Length: 186
Image 1 (tube, helix red, strand yellow):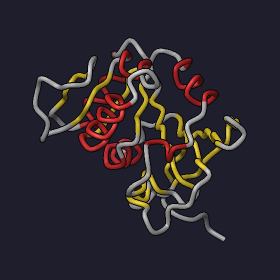
Image 2: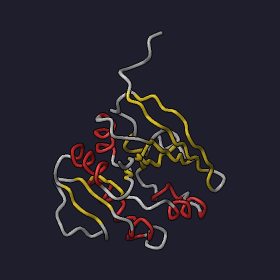
Image 3: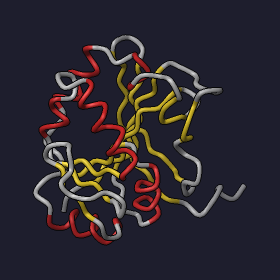
Image 4: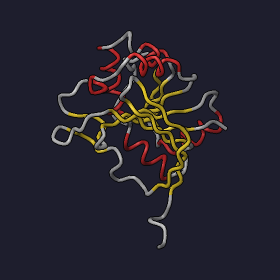
């Protein structure tokens, strides 16, 4: 049985990106980019919007994102069509919950989401997420922030299992999530 890791990069105020800000808020440093390239082989799961954004970023920064371009990716979308432009990407146009459940059972590699808020919400609600990892970038994008990452999520209890600082400014927080019915009784 494979594991599923949810991966997010966020601003301190919880946004997935900001209007006018470059990818990684312009703060990607060599330590962080090196760590991304050193990650164990896995298959990235993406929704259509994240696929579009990341494939454009990979085209703009081919050397920095060569590792991600080389890894296998699965995009869940009813709006995209083959052939996809980003190398090593498979399109799945059916519901993600059943497809990911089967992938966890039968896939040869661990699975990671990349962004993909709607996809991640569905996978969390279905209880399919084994790890939840966030890298916090030291910016607040209150006025320009787009897509608050955690809005609409189920309530989660998070057990901290790893922390790390990259380039003296980026904070990694990794948790084991448990979906809960609401706040614990007082």
